[in-house]
Image 1 (tube, helix red, strand yellow):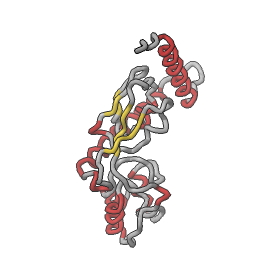
Image 2: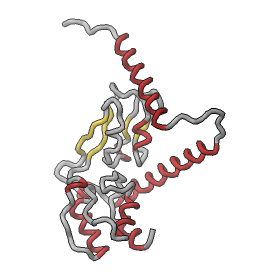
Image 3: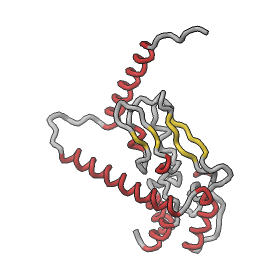
Image 4: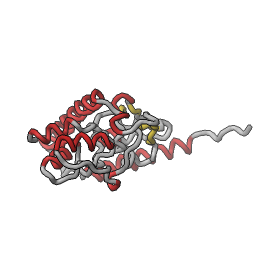
Length: 210
């Protein structure tokens, strides 16, 4: 990452939400520095974020491009623990390790670590994750802070290190049989968890009539 890209990255909210069209904030920062992306593709940064990037790049101010989203209040993910089947797919999706849980056990969100990136929403097979507004009336950088951005960045770096270490370990571990494709493995986990949930539901006694 060159000097300009690093300064642009420092000016981003570090939610790692990918709404800008890039894999993370650093990727977007590099694209802006290289002239490959506009300065108005970051909904979490909002209008103030665009102003920051305009000052850094010397480009004219623009409104937020609606194809990447709209500026709004910061949200936090909330898991309905009664419906959670412990599939762990949201753990893999969360860029800041804000979700706590293990396989086949219900998960919960650590509020202080959630950036509201929404990446856990589409991967949940039972739709038990919702969003709650955390900053009513405040959006963009008014709903976020430099301290929170730095904390999110550090957690994202740790998450990336753990993910890369796990990938290297998997590649270095000898296997006798051909490893199962990741998507097939995850689908098997989800199907098994759903089967357990259905079985548990069938075993519950009927509710008493009033």
